[in-house]
Image (cartoon, rainbow, N blue to C red):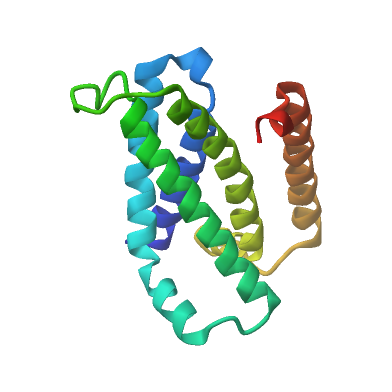
Amino acid sequence: MSLQARLLMNLVAGGLLLAALAYDWLGNLAHELIGTVMFGLLFAHNTFNRRWYGSAVRKGGRDLRAWLNSATIAALAAAMLILLTTSIIISRSLFSALPIASSFGARQLHAQAAYWALVVVAVHVGMRWSMIMTSMRSWLRLGAPNAGRTWILRVVALSIAAYGIHSWTVIGTSARL
């Protein structure tokens, strides 16, 4: 798969994670459909990046950054596995025909795992930010880094981060973790 397709797939998966958090606006069926597509994209993401797992095990924790990267991916895998498992348990639309009893505890665990997944995905993306920007520069066929463009993109990124922090406090996400 081309680099552009992989970047787009990852962007869509991240957008779907955010969209899935709008459960009250979208309703249950849309939430379950979004989650199912997101998990399909995550499966593809891990399939395309499977070589990393082998090289990470072989190389081990070379330094603090490598150790933090592995810990972040382990936390993300745990959150996503909890989300996947609880999704099937509490499903009222797509998987409701399965003979699994739903529980209030599973719903709470699902919601908590979703908020933690959002935090860990942000760390995961942040740790790869320079690689993402290099890939985007290549994809868009931009030349060498340009100081003006760099500052404009930094202001845009800072604005998005500031709005995210504002939303975090308005919604009261800290209390949900």
